Length: 189
Image 1: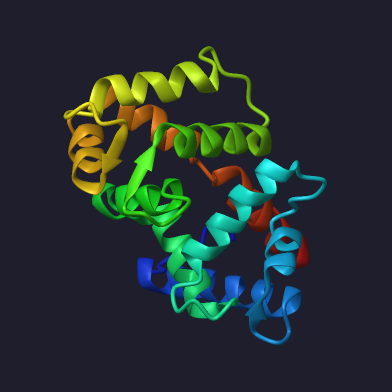
Image 2 (image 1 turned 180 degrees about the vertical axis):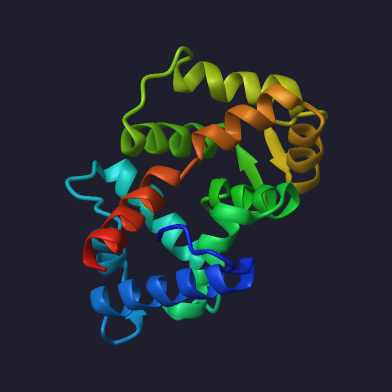
């Protein structure tokens, strides 16, 4: 998408939405993205069992009506959250993603599993091990020390800890996937 003189932000967003729609419908002509197509769509191949489980959890959080598919509106909502969502919305999504068993709390093992999976998918080396990271999160924000993070503990704890907020945001940075799709959009236009 080049520089267009006199274009408004809305026109650019509309053009971008049209490109996203074309990409979505080209990759998924039925208009419904299955889990298999979701992985293919984002170029996620040869994943470990743990990483595959993480991607499945991510798929489930984006499937807002729980019908087993992601339609275009759910896809746009997910991209919007990832690209433009505010801190509160992102923290709500992070919590839902980390709460693997849907219990309403995140335990240390759930957090560790997701962190390991994210790191395996992103392939970026980290200074701190996944275990140390999970322990640090619990040490900092598990206020009552019960070994579980409620939604309130998680949101309040992360919001009040700049370093933790930055680390969690960076660990869930999906911009490399978005950049890949945008690169494909440019090539196909």
